[in-house]
Length: 234
Image 1 (cartoon, rainbow, N blue to C red):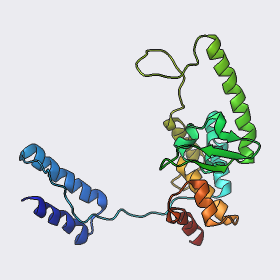
Image 2 (cartoon, helix red, strand yellow; image 1 turned 90 degrees about the horizontal axis):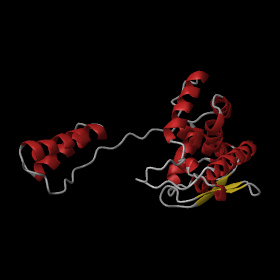
Image 3 (cartoon, rainbow, N blue to C red; image 1 turned 60 degrees about the vertical axis):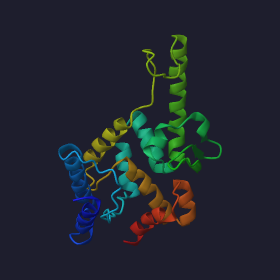
């Protein structure tokens, strides 16, 4: 069998058997392995089969009370980051990459630079996070000045063998949030990204128009933001 037969088989899986996209991908990868590794007949031509549709699931949203329970179950930097995720609608990687120059305490704004899709945007800085954020910055400044006095404090460069400080790893807060959710016993599949969904939903509940929420979240397509609106209509 050649390219056309393979396309017909994969299309049959999607169109007639209605398999999940993961099942179709598994079948395709198995055929690639068969042809490339066993038969020694690499599939050089692009396979243009009908693709199985990925299941569309509505995002999990916490109530304000549930979100605050999870936040209270955290401590230190993890607690501050959770407040920023919930109060500003940041993606986790955006939160980890924040710099002092991106924060405007006077205007209660955060500049998100080079976000998803290479887009800069401005979002809200919540009052509840401001005090802890200022304290955090003072501690970081002290640590940095101490590092400089000891000959450290420089930017990390690969393969130098020198000790440098780096971003907190995203798995650190992810593990902390899972632990806090377990302690609260909230029966929902909550992750760090759930804070962002909750931020959007609660803005819509408070009367913000959909376009404003779209801009705050940095969505290219308003249909992505409308998914949160669907949560309000359930």
